[in-house]
Length: 254
Image (cartoon, rainbow, N blue to C red; front, side):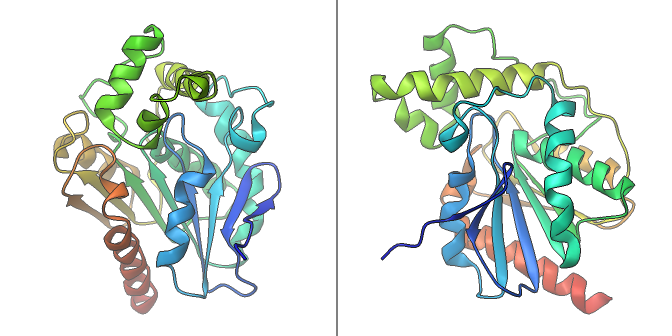
């Protein structure tokens, strides 16, 4: 019998529970994405690592909740939900828009005295980079779907079913609108940052990824995977293994 993932409050879903974890991995979805995007990661984690994902409003079982209107609002609401997790080492992983959300939450948690052991950012340009972010929020449905299809990912597959489009398109548009108004500030964190990206992702080239170096006073590393913006769909096992390997190395260095 398949185990149903546990809802841990309004903002977090536990995709792989663990009674006494040595490590918690908290994942932040991409624009239009939802907590369930990270469900396949549970199969790649050892028994003593707990997996959680952030539940953005306006999708899945939060369909009736209003979308966040700004990055600041979103981060301010997620931060207190994450704070109780820090009785164990915590790693943040954010993909695309989720990388910025994870960073903003980490900044706010650091001000409270809680800090991720590692901040992992994926397929997103770093703050302060000279690479413009395309604004897609105001495109009509057909143009928006064409753009998202070009990026790949599971949302593009949903467009093939017209009955699903009213559920899928509004969160994408709302998140792109949020990103349009986002002006990141550079607040260097005392935790290491690992940046991941797809080698064929034209929207997030290596130079844009390198801009994440400015947000850490600790170690900074990058790794490219074959593929485009949603490279992680084809390289889940290798990506998770890389994250866990970095965590092990950090633990040994202390």
